Image (cartoon, rainbow over all chains, first blue to last red; front, top):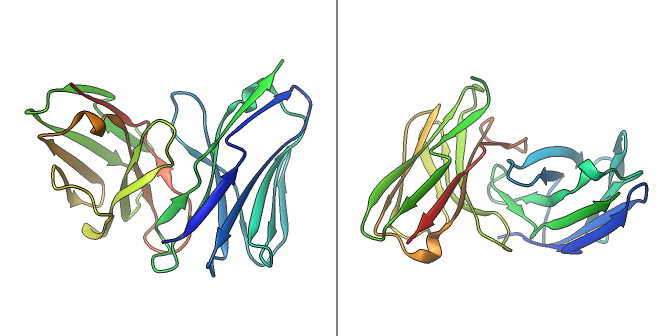
Length: 113
Length: 113
């Protein structure tokens, strides 16, 4: 199956700072790169995704960048707020089954007021 | 109610018990999934159903038995579980096939004594 590595596993920032989480992958022809957010005690929810025909996508304070040559994609959160505190997961579809997602190990982001 | 609903939200069972987890979605999706979420581990895919047919079994022990009577309902039957099976079990749904958003339920927190 697809191998995806996510770093860092924990990230603590001050409110207003930026946060960056990176995922690297191997042996993939994937063209879809989603990010999920899971608040404490809540369900994971898709927050942003990108397809391989673009290198960057932005949605207000969050953005995702993709480097297919280097096989990594990153989540960028600017002007962080306490409500951004959560676990963030990157994911990749399996090559053999587009509906099966392999998730990264998650990043616990803490935004300190 | 819209979205993906899971019951029960919490379950405590002994190793000799038999119980079932239920998932229901009202999104018109044709694919449903069971994921296991343990502490400090990535989301692990257990089973995938497309149009009521099981298309993936990710080497899950037979003490977990899924059932999908229709595209809106998914069950996970549990019997003779082990303490290491204690985890959050998440149900998800999506449009069948392709690369699209997974919609998760809130999860069933299982504790095996």
